[in-house]
Image (tube, rainbow, N blue to C red; front, side, top):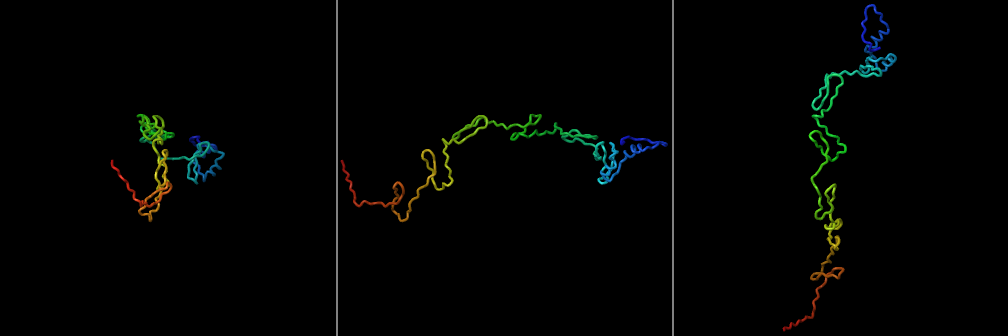
Length: 226
């Protein structure tokens, strides 16, 4: 079988078929056109340690007892741990790790929205933003406030009067009924054409121009002295 090692033949030794298979055939680099040809030729004699070369892919492969895998040859002689890393090596399988004594790793950010990164001099962590406001007092024209938790301020509509919506109120004036305010229409003057010298009067419903009336009979007032 492959891996039988080395045998030193001497003059007169009888070379058997088993020896040829074990020390020559199974330990040589066997050349095949492709993996299909290799499977066909070696199915019944596969042994761990066999080496083959496939001409279609130019691949050298080894058989580990269960499957074929590529023999990868590299020219790296050593892996050196640089700045911020530890580990490395010059033989076998080597590992590099982050050097957490010189590189500070940001802690997990999941669930930390709105917080800030802080340190205790040794490690970092997320902390909640804290202010120094102790209370929110509702001043003039406001209601609400508080000294803990989330507080709210509202406009005090009992002391601050809110102007009603101005949309669609062009040309009107602001008035009140003593309780609430509203927009009102300004009564237009009647036409002034041909009304020179007249005065404006109203009947309580509408305004109009009226002529000044002169009494033809003079009135005499007698002032009596004591």
